[in-house]
Image (cartoon, rainbow, N blue to C red):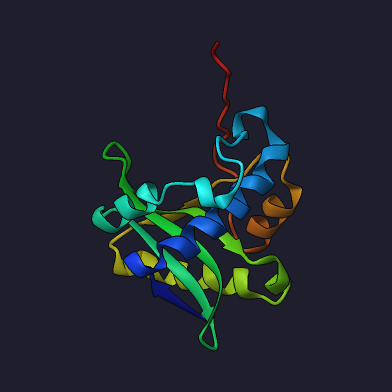
Length: 155
């Protein structure tokens, strides 16, 4: 398994995989409701902006030359903290037909190795509160709960 940095030629693959991931999050909160009926309606602008943003990088998860998922990483800085620089897993998805083969865990290990290369102090990730599978996956990967994010719909 390897992580291949995405290029402009990979935008369709990223959008399709993001849409699958986003669709699976709809059941966890009404705030996750999508504005698009299918992946073909999703503009690739967000991922195109990632290509220009030095703090965000998208990778395709590749196994023997086949793409089986994607991960989006973002670096950030909290200047008031002694451990101030972080690397955040923003999106992580393995295509359904390739799940339960250890690819997600392998992605986390590769990302963990990037923390030092990116001059970061720690790795962070978040998931939907009621997504027990994701919470179990990240706990099993060595992450510890640190913070809870609350959301409120405003009409």
